[in-house]
Amino acid sequence: VGAAFNLSDFPFIANEAWNQAWIERPSYVRPIRIDTLAPSITAVVIGVDAVNPTTVASVDSNVTLRLELSEQIQEPTVHIAGRPADTVTCELSVCTASITVLATDGNRSIDEPIDWSIDPISDLAGNQGSSRTSSHDGTTDGSHVTIDTSALVLTVVSLSSDNDVSASRAKTG
Image (tube, rainbow, N blue to C red; front, side, top):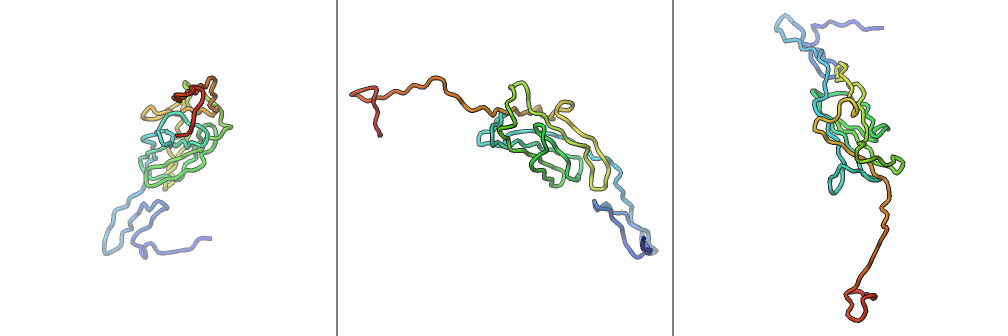
């Protein structure tokens, strides 16, 4: 059941994205602005959040996919390394999605970067844009990340001492 109202009572109407459509009133005329443009992904970059930035992610590393967009969008659905992103945040026309690498994510060769995908995006007015995947589109800067979850194994370990009495003995200090 809808409610009747007189449009001349309102100086403008706006959709969810605050795209305003101005209404002509007898005393003034305002422009009508309606968003019909589909949003687009203008840049995609992937990286590892680490003390020493690298392209290899280990267990407990955060892998982050950063999206730059033509306009503000609704929160997108993003998959990284074959699973949904742990977090997705959007601020204005930039979104970031990230995962924390788990031991179960498995190892990949250096020639096999992790996969990612972005489902079709939509702007705040509901206009639908396209999707993007690592296998089809890649990143815009050529960035990539591989996962290495194997524990470091030392096969040969040797110790030496500068002890003047016996090189096979060491002491503190």
